[in-house]
Image (cartoon, rainbow, N blue to C red; front, side, top):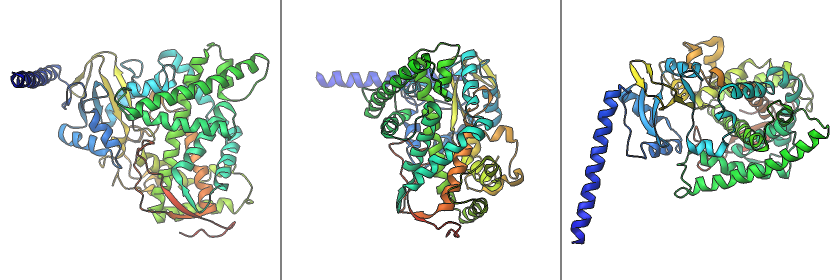
Length: 477
């Protein structure tokens, strides 16, 4: 009897699943959706996407679907049906219609960890005001007059501690986190900032996991770490609020939030700081590490970069800091930065939600559906860049090798949500490369493949063996 009950239950489950898939497929055809596959019930293709991003090469998830369905396809990830776009015109349409046809929308694993008041999730006039405020603390004049000296000092301070063997990703994370903490809250490196950074490592692990604490230890650990980060920042906000009310002022982001007319609560300020720390820490450190990796694998580019920076350093004493005029005299460095951003993709893409039924390219995106504009897929498309998956900084000299640059090169997003720290990230990478190539020679310490878009848990640390060079000595290639 038990056997027949078991058989009946299994048969019913299979029939139900098949009926569900057929019904869903029929509905998709009626809606004129982009072609694609919604995967398994409830789970969709989330596991395939996560698995791809935990390898050294996540392109197959999009590559396989683009080759089968075209540059716009339907899938189901992070609990929702989603339209993926690998088409530059469609991506631009999505970005430019922010707040009109599309609104910001991210998976629960990201929004829960950043906080409901983070800049990434803000909408409407509030987002516009806060985006403008953030950009005012990271524009060219602020970097030139205030931030560059701290960037140069903190990069030097970190490199001074390097010994024969360095885990480059870890060192890059320290640099970017210290820079971001300084910019946001005026803290110099110390035990408090390092303790906070270690909790951030755990938070970021949770971004690309299924947001179910019961089934994911990584996500559960990330939520706990996020709570600790919020508690630590809350103490700082309360102390600074008392200082502000007592008449003490500082020139940083936290001071601007406390002095604003919006009367933000402590919770709102903490969420805002959490998101900015993530933005300034994880992405830029990854770009720093990958720039060194790509240069190490491209000796001619490394040699030309060294020559440019040795020329700048030859006009200065060993302890003299870089100035804005030095940064503006790094043309090949900017080619390296552009190409690193293109190949490594500081922003892989953006999630949005359709606010109404939207017709585009002969398809319909139903109201309420999520869309993902993939910048990465466009950057690595051979139709837009010759030998697109080869690191070639010379392609940026005289803008050769590009077509439709406004559409195809979007390393910092675009539209109203253009990354406000885009110039700051470029300056940080340029200063880091300057001090690295003028002070050290290096070789990879071992065979160590580094994933293009690493999560903290799966990434390699990219160990290198470094040798400190003499001032003005020629750096060995």
